[in-house]
Each structure stands twice: as structure tokens, then as C-alpha cells.
Length: 185
Image (spheres, rainbow, N blue to C red):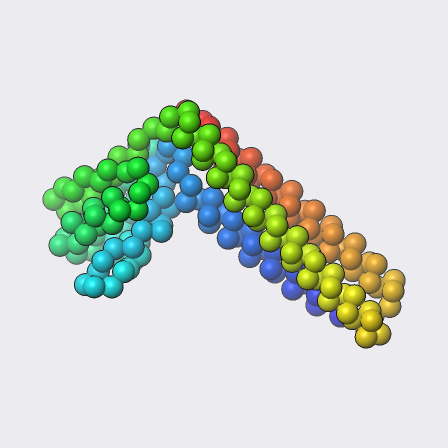
């Protein structure tokens, strides 16, 4: 019984960390990363469509992104969508591609980004702790229903706590690495 609860908690925590990693990847660092444009939706024949579904996005160097749409007539729509996204980017339409120069971040903007990174990390830790609480509640419920013993309850809670500590430490490492990346000039 407690193994099932543990593995459920482990899966949920893994998914929470993946979500945090995705969210942090979209935070601008001053280096070109195609993930910066992940949240952008383009008007594709009247339907808001994720940019990465209608174009290839790559970073030929650290200071620019290259967006190559599958259909050339989408270039003006892509430019509009990137400008509307309010990322501080100024796309340049060319014959068959959209160039997106990545401006360097100033010190104040870097500090704002670090605050955002820390907030995302803290939200992730809260999610992990909520998963721990839910798992512990399930263990207590199982003990009350006489499905597991009191000793099993204690062992299960300790395993869940160890898992929680490991995942929170992992989040701290991810956040620290992202902070260094943001502050790097």
C-alpha cells in the first residue's frame, strides 16, 4: 500500500520538476534560446497556433534566433506575434526568414529575471510540499483504515520526506544554475 502511495508521489514530483524546468527555460537570459519563443501563438488562418508548429526556430549564434516558417506568407503574422508577446524583442522580416536579435540584458533587467527565477523555484517547492502533504494524508488514512500498521506509517512518512528533500534540493540546483546563467554577462 505505502509503495503505491510513494510511487504516485514520486511521479507527481517528477512532473512538477519537469514543469519548473520548462518554465525556467522560457526565462530570457540574454543568450539566444529557441525556448524564449515557446509561448508565442501566431494567427494561422484565423486560429491561434504555437509558433513552433508553423516554423522551425533555431539559434545560429548566441545573439540571434532564426525563425523559418513553413509558409512564407506567414512572415508578417510571425513578426506581429513576436512583437505582441512583449518580450522586448524586435523581429526583422527578411525574404524567407524572420531574424530575432537578442539584446543584452542590463543589470536591472537581470535582477528582475533573477527574482522571477526564484519565484518559479519557490512555486515549485510549494508544489512538491503539497504532494508530500497529500501522500502523508493517504498514508494516515490507510493506517486509520487498518490497511497499514503504525510502523509502516512512520516508515512511509520518512520515505516521503526523503523524497521531498531530494526534489527540493534538485529545484534549488536548477534555480541556482539558471540564476548564474541570467547574471552572466
